[in-house]
Length: 164
Image (tube, rainbow, N blue to C red):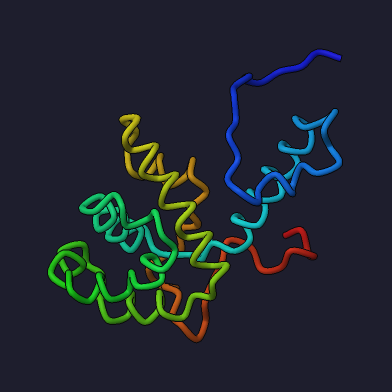
C-alpha cells in the first residue's frame, strides 16, 4: 500500500493524547479519522452567511488577529459588529441583523464559524481572492435575498444523518 501525505512532528496539548489512547501502533490513521470527523462537523455546523457578511467578519478579525484564538471572543463577535457598524454598512450589511444572527449561534456553531474564519484568513494570506478563499474554506454563502435571520438560521448542511 502506497502512503501519501506529509510527514511532520505533532505536539499534542494536555488531554489530547486521550484521542490516541489504544492507537499507539496506528496513530496516523487515527489522527486522519479525527481530522475527517472534525471537518465533517464543521461542514455541517457552520452557519450560512451572505458573502458581504463573511467579508465583514473577515475584515473585523483581520483587524485583531488574536480575536479567533479564544472561543469566548468569537462568542462576543456580535458586539464587535455593533461597535463597527460603519464598516458593516460600507459592505451593505445591516450590523444589527448580523449581530442578532451571531448571537443566536450555539457553541458548536461558534466553533465551526471560528474554524472557517481561520481557513478564509489563511487562504487570503496566501494571496487568494476573497471569493476563492470562501469557497476553499468551506464557507456556506447564502443568497442575500434569502439572508439567514436568527429565526431561520441556515447552516452548511441540514442534518448529519441525512448526508445531504
